[in-house]
Length: 425
Image (tube, rainbow, N blue to C red; front, side):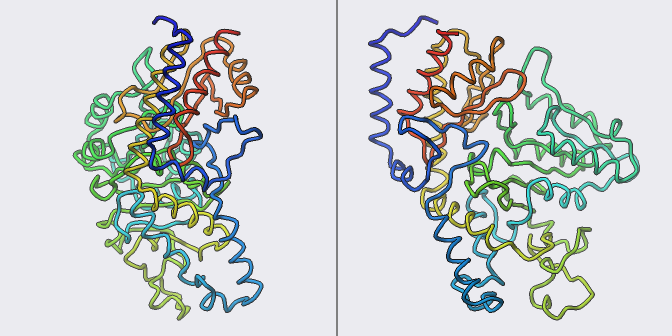
């Protein structure tokens, strides 16, 4: 590909600035406290930890004030009564992931939720015992899967099937996933698949792959850690059995934030499904009778064990308010343009290899770059120049221009930093 001239680069920047001038979502940038030392610094790492919404501090302080002022009476008498506090999140979460309010709940952390959900949905019986996951999944997912299989007295090395890309390729082909599912047939008990693969940024067709899993009589669940708040999801219509996601990446709810869960309505209504039981999953009509008999509520809440952590939920309320105000479809439309511009600029730079698929349907806002040589040196040069991404072995640097707070001009400037690094190293 020919090298761009100074005149070409000036034209590209003018185009980026024009897109910013036309961006109806640009006011949302001021609603976030971007963790940058200099105004020229670029934060493209919201796929690892999202910045703090400016409204967060006030919401947390209100709960601290109500605790100080009311003590235990804040459960019923505070501005947002604690006893029903988590219910505020049902609507925003449902709108965010394309679900019904009865299908979502904010609880625990992502890894804990995967354990809770596999207790219900991984039910090996007879020859139907296989658990399907992608090779090189996020390590915590792999740990959870392996330990669940072992806890059932099974051999994880035999029962866990890992999906790998074809030789010489970085990403999975969906037709290969379907072929593996069909081959496993009635030996497959559960598929746990990623909405977006964390290293490559590849997004998957949730409806298509769920249909393939159900066709062989198995359950299908999804890890949406890199998809919730990034893609426009339709979980109810997808027919997925369950999904789980964290809230500290694209959802900007802070480190270790309370995570989210989706359980399809047909499963919510099946009160006979096994699950870990706790008093907050009990029918709220009888919860405070303190009976020793667990009666699960017909809601995703039935999988929550403990009462919600108020101080930890307040930041999630602040962030989801921004998603509601912006609209996930508007955010996705801007994201497609941001990422397309970034890809176009990066492809003009000799030596840059993009692992993430080019199709907008097969990716969110993350682009993963592979550097065969001196990857760490390139990453360090990006950081020194004020461009924040993150590094993953082997030689991968991930960047995520995020539509809530990043700009098209930042995309242009980020590409220039990469260009200069490639020229100097």
